Length: 475
Ligand code: AMP
Ligand code: ZN
Image (cartoon, rainbow, N blue to C red):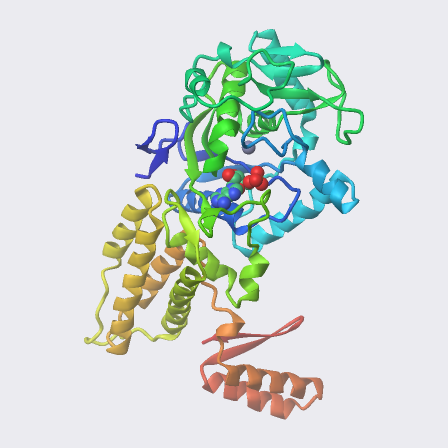
């Protein structure tokens, strides 16, 4: 059974979903004012591995990932959601574009990047700007129930009213009061630690909406409460994000949602620790980040990057180095060569044929993944299977090829490692023969074309004509 470390309880817990066989999962998505970087990708990849492994284990997963296209202020990570500029508007002014143009551009970039990283797309990517009425409705409920108050067109959550405030991060009101004060608390707040649900927009603010309190815009935290509730219900199974989301963002989400609905918000909180670069957090706002393009420019593939993440546990801090990427690249090449070989190996069906006990490897793989997604251990189990199988293939004794192939492929899929034997894995001389055959066909020299097809087949490959050329496959 899968055990997950739950930030809410600070311990590993058996994962038991609300509905048998089904999992509801919300992942905090990108704020679309800049390129997503490989630090963000660690958070999305953690959620992807979790989803993939749940699916491997037989669950049906519904995953929602929001697009933050309004309300995330430049000082949100250090403040209580009421000071600084809107990140979208700041980027738009700089680029002389509208916030919407900026948002769509970086949303597409984020989705394309995830796709090339083989991250499964969420079933839905709701945008904050398209859920303003949902947020207003929750804020109205909070005011009605006495958990929020309006002041000069702004609305704040009154954290003194929620006795469980701090249960996720440990930042209770008492703990906050003993720490440093906020430099410039909003003048309309009762308590400096109250956080913004709605802010009145200054005249020059671009993104603003009518509301019962003012023409303004929502706080960042209320977005995720509104969108998760809309698509997953008042209580759902898993909420994911990076460790910087724990406070204030997720603490605030709990406060708003539990006070509005009167029920528990989320059962399991899963946070990945940060990806560091030169010893500090890789960060968009500080401009200290690498994108997927930077990785590719140095000759590494998206698969190499995925394996780099898998080589460290999601709950340990990961310092990005080019050396770690080189190590991952070697592992990727080992897996690729192995799959190519396994796919073309003819099982030994004579009395010399021997089986590898796949169940032992399956058990080790599942034990590792069940233990709070221990991907480094899971991957080393797969590499151990590669070593043993290679030995059996060297000795020409391997019998249960297809059983190994089936398990290996399924396990790789749970980690998001591609197992498709691609055209690039086909030896160059075979591709050259195929190109010559293509030329012959274009020149209507069918005798030569057939001759080349036979030659390709004699070398163990099949060629198929498709609309945009040809496809080669191992026989
Ligand atoms: P943002 O676009 O800044 O709202 O971040 C999107 C997601 O990426 C959030 O879940 C963050 O917690 C996560 N994230 C941001 N930076 C890092 C990092 N350096 N390492 C891991 N996760 C990160
Ligand atoms: Zn969020």
